[in-house]
Length: 236
Image (tube, rainbow, N blue to C red; front, side, top):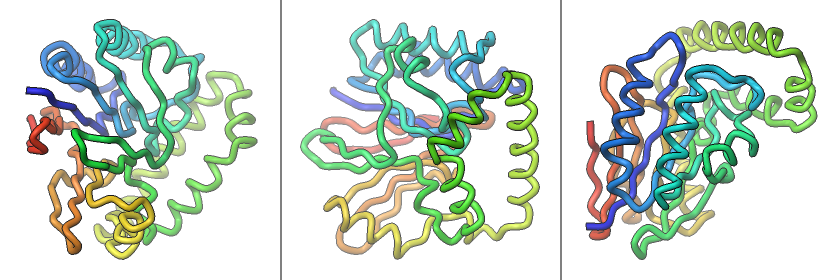
């Protein structure tokens, strides 16, 4: 039976090698069984530029390249941690970069994909930060800095983000229901798939809408499988 796979929020890093191993397992044993793999952001815990090379980035590139060379396309949407992944890395993987919101035809059904951070509009501080870091001139300036300095800046930002989260309520860090409904209407869809909130679930909403939230990776992987019959299930 035909199927597509969706993952997000792996947060791969050198400090958590077990996650890299889980990624390899999925890429070698699950992804090859599908027609396409969609990575909806935060593949890495942070990304400071396509010029950074490490054992981790090389391994991930190799795994994705092996998949795409088998004729199985891999699509990537930027997350809030790896929004600087660029064309150079994507091309090296054979991976296609997608915009912030992207519509796909999933076995005859129009489905909207996004990372999910743009749906959390109640977190005003984060949305202001996101607006700044997505400015092209800021990105160009950051990428022009020496690699070591970018690493130091990224580490400071990550520590601050972790501290800020401890001060925020769970509600603020989740999606805004009214805004989600607006997005459904704006894109004229009844199904949406996203990550970011780390709250794996399938929500059945008014107006026959369905919002599928991808899970984050911790001790186990989380993979959404959608088959040609429109059936959805999480593989863990």
